[in-house]
Length: 372
Image (cartoon, rainbow, N blue to C red; front, side):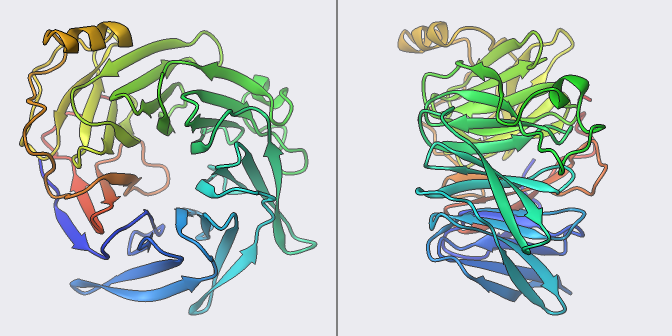
């Protein structure tokens, strides 16, 4: 399979997000601006440019129900953008950070959003109508290094984070007056704000791209050591699996279904991971069709995988690590975004953007079996 659409929007793209109807895309061309492109007839035209940040915009998320855009930047600020007529108007967010904001994501109900930062802090932001601004409650003293990724559980309460300290953590974000008592599970409602539920010490290197499965039963994140980690039943009795691969490390992951994950990163090509009937995850193939893997068991300890590579006896696929890398992308993929409508359980279309300034739209073949 290959990308169905390739669009060269800039020389470099740091992040991107889609409008609810998928007719517009917001992206940062590696500067202080956010460009919004609208598809008209047979081409993409730049419709808006959002000016407010003073440094590179590192995160963008576009609400599916509220149609609001939230941005985060290295200038330690975040803004919520509302469309008023033909203009996008920013609303101030009080983050109280002394280091760069690195990532941002709306909660499922879009009444909160989370911002990860280089200050080892996660900001949980909510709206105060009396003052017409967004304020934040901070999760402090939990991370030992920069927070590289945030992901909301479907219950709107639990939040997973990844960090350059190599750990993945899950916190409660229940805020009185914002979240209702019928939100989340009974156990998550009983937890105090900022309470850590679990800390996963699976990776010995930086961690990126954390995501929950559609049901919220599985957590996946990537390590800078060319390993992806899957954790099931996170809040009760976590069952952990590591899948090591010969390709370059991932930067972001996306659940296509409950049993299929797409990952992308420094190898410039999306990678497919699936869960078989026995419950084991494995690397299947790369989506550009140039390099494919023979099905094999890639579950085990990180040490044993590294030991196998040292002596040329890796349990991984037979991919030649010295082959030229990449397909349609020519540089690192930094962001994956689903192209789906609210309520969809399976993602058949998604987009990737990277340091080559391209946005690629990928479509999973209808003949391709997607395990659910």
